[in-house]
Length: 220
Picture 1 (tube, rainbow, N blue to C red):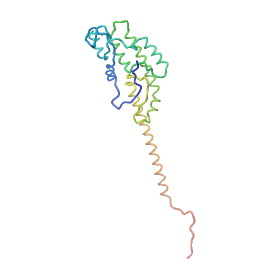
Picture 2: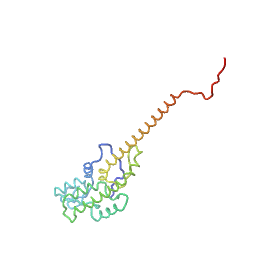
Picture 3: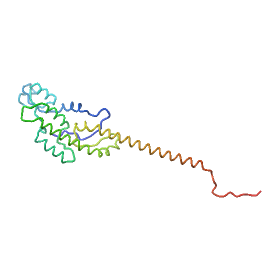
Picture 4: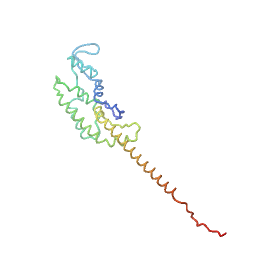
């Protein structure tokens, strides 16, 4: 399943998409849970039900059901994704937008099956680090694309919430610093031109007027 957004829209100052807000939004992701009770029509004991992540966590915490891990959150799926991230220049689009936040929530406690949460968490952390490093290397290209835009925006296929929360503010700051340096350079150039014009004007005004043709002297 691919729910990754593909646009890096730099937020306004103070709206940088913190990890807390990203984690909160991730809780609305739909996920499967197997309930241990029946409450018609939503829940039937032993039958998987699709609910928001926050509700699935609540049921599991109260021992009323167990969460079914998403298909992508498995060793068999994550290892090829990690290899792809290491060998391909572009980000993979096979991860959901909140893959990092979902993983942290679903691997924070032991499971009753054979799944090792620590292995999943480490694989996802490695994937995240590789993706962040690739985005950092592409910073100059992003700056070049956005420098002339009124609203800085660049398409980044496959980028996820965690990368946006970490790199978005840095990219915004870099873009602001670049704009400030360009403004200072333009101001300095304009000032030098004005000074040159003023100096030239003074030299012209101060020169005595000399006729090009010698004046004739007339006798009385």
